[in-house]
Image (cartoon, rainbow, N blue to C red; front, top):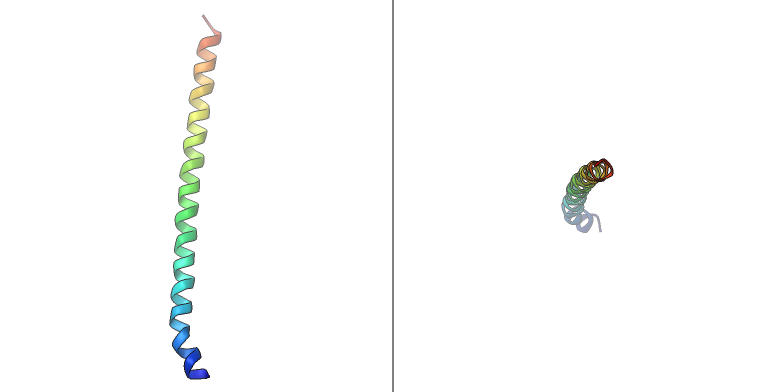
Length: 54
């Protein structure tokens, strides 16, 4: 039983590392998407402000 457990241990550790890496990548992508949305919002507000003034 313990031998089987020790055989599985590296795989579990690897999958945990992979999950952590996936979470990091997802967080980075989400951050970039948030920044892009904020920039787009600022640009749209500027366009709207320019349209309001003749």
